Image 1 (cartoon, rainbow, N blue to C red):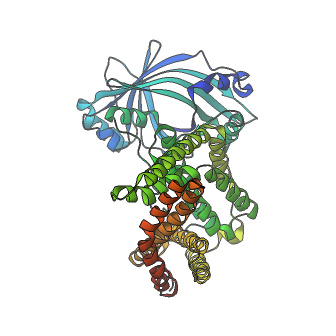
Image 2 (image 1 turned 180 degrees about the horizontal axis):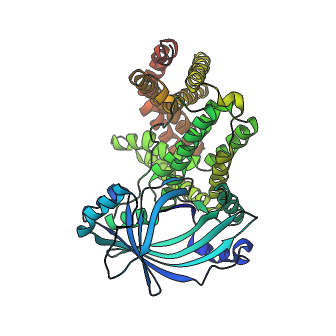
Image 3 (image 1 turned 90 degrees about the horizontal axis):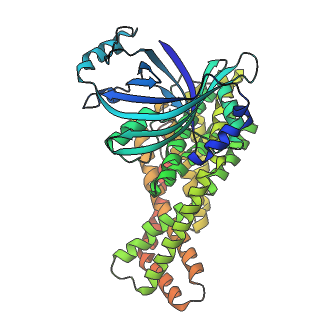
Length: 501
């Protein structure tokens, strides 16, 4: 058995020639000649190997055939490590006897009679050897071709950096060098997973944050690293989807990932180097800012304008405003997609991953008790929310929005730290915050929409009438919620907190 450590990067097909011309690639010695690889992946009709995160593949390279078995890999920021068994494939029959993990071998021998081809990958592979300094050896493999299943096909363009000798962090150093001029993006999804998705004809779905994986034995820095890598995976998954799909939920979840990352930076800031916190707070804000307009217009359409239109009461002027919102939203979405296709986002992801791997704890932070740290930080966040609550007493929209942001940071912190806290009480507390946060979100969305519609209307009397009608339609609900929202928060911010002893 070997343990393969590689960093996988994707890029647009139009950038293939530029990648080949990059000095790091063009001047590197080749390992053999370019080869065309035909891979066939096998599974049972019920896809039982996929269910167990295993893969069985045959590969034809020239006149040679190989059989490969792979097991689940943990992939973070494109970097993956997985157990792999490879041997000659002869007589059109699998042989699993050499697999030295009893559970894997037994499972494959049981399923062997029912294995059938499910999809294929056809691609040209060009391999060069990178030796940036003594003790470092990396294979750079450029794959370009297609994935095919049934009568469907999808293009394949990847660069895999496979570590032969040295520290895995060197893979990021090479990738960042290339990403200075090339639109490379780290990729966690394997060729096999893409093939299964094509075979099943399942569209890519927006990814949501997964439950926290913290434990009380971790130091604050180690805990932050786990959370940050999970947020980075969420960022990557939704960025891939946003490049391929018009579904607005991809951009929404992408921005959620960036907000969660920034919240984690603030939460663990006292344990992290100040320069690291400042650099990434600014960098992540810049990454999110260019995507905000498209999402804001989607929200305005869904939460403010569509309910009015569906009421049957909207007049021609209101419908004109809706048409303007749709047009501007579509233009912003096109601009956001262009931003996602640019090199900067992929380079940011790679730089963040490299910095996370390099992040070190000093002796004092390393010895800090994570549960104690969590309780102190949550108490501080609640105190800040109390101050925002007091500042919002006059119900000014800007102050209500600041209160909402404060509550969001508190809720994210609770979600991050949940494994260290009493689960049931903490989940109820977080749900109560989310309910008030949703109310504040609606109040903010309506206030922003009212201002935007007024600006669009300008001096046009018909559009001004439409903007006034939309505001009036929402007014009774706005008045009711403004009256109740601050009192509903008082038991949350001044009652017993679940993290208190």
